[in-house]
Length: 424
Image 1: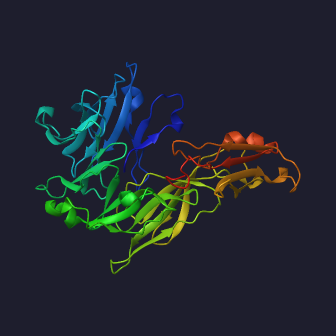
Image 2: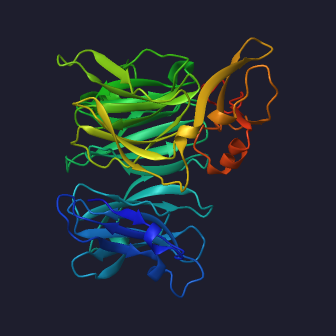
Image 3: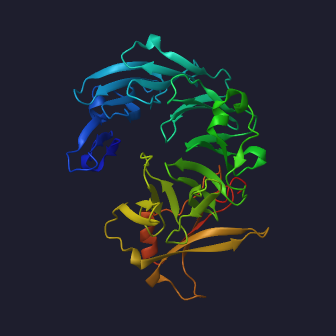
């Protein structure tokens, strides 16, 4: 079971407490890392990563006690509570290898730019660590993560407008880094592993809202072919009304997250049984205006996908979708004392701009305070459009006093916020 943060029962504490609990029985909750104790005697304590090893016996965590955003990595034996320092002076990212013997981390240059990826063997001195990759271009920085399948280590090098990705097959001890596609100025892409393919989200070919493509694994792992992306194929045809944001892969299906119609959307995707035709189905939502997010999804061999849901009338929920039964279940909802959602109504309306563009708006009001059409009523209009930062129609307890006094609350999703993609 992966660690989770527990904060509610420990009000007054300044830092998180990371815990775990057995999944299939009523065993007691186990504290993995109490950052409050870690911070004792220090003016600053920043923990960036907390990662349990694949065999669930070790805990790796990175901590910065100097407020310089330079971290040391420690390993805690969860059976004996013995703690040893493994790595000094990294950027805080931690990725376990295929087993509990190897971890990967990233170090910084003199300008504090993450640029070098290392492999560390537990128990060995840091001086023996292997340098896997160095990004020499000062316009780029390096990042590292592991695919959901656990098979590939992914090294990304990123600038503001360009990316380049390398993968390392952790299941093959003889493998070396393979470039998915060489960097091209202005082209961004990210990868995830699904079955026998890599799924690639990219803005290639000038498709500013990104599209989903795929390439067979054997093409990527063949060093002679990987340098050419001509064998990438479209999973779904590019749709300028859909902004592709992320892909979350599971063993038998994957989830495509993005935006359409001014709202966050999720599509359940896969291939037909003959393994030749891609398909996707949009997850239906119960309200006209809402906001989706990705919850913690750490199980790869599962038929369930967890996401968060909220609207102007619905407090934040954690929802679980079952791929087999095509059903959803609400696992958790944030409690709001004295709140009765049946008193309120949320709807979508549109306003026409001077150029004819329809601007979506989220409207909420208290039902028994709504005046008849044609009668004047107080209205609070909010709009923010900048930096491609959308104003999501999330639940806001702070507007309830306005609604209870008969005020209609409106969010105008004006251009600049990116609600309808990069051109919005």
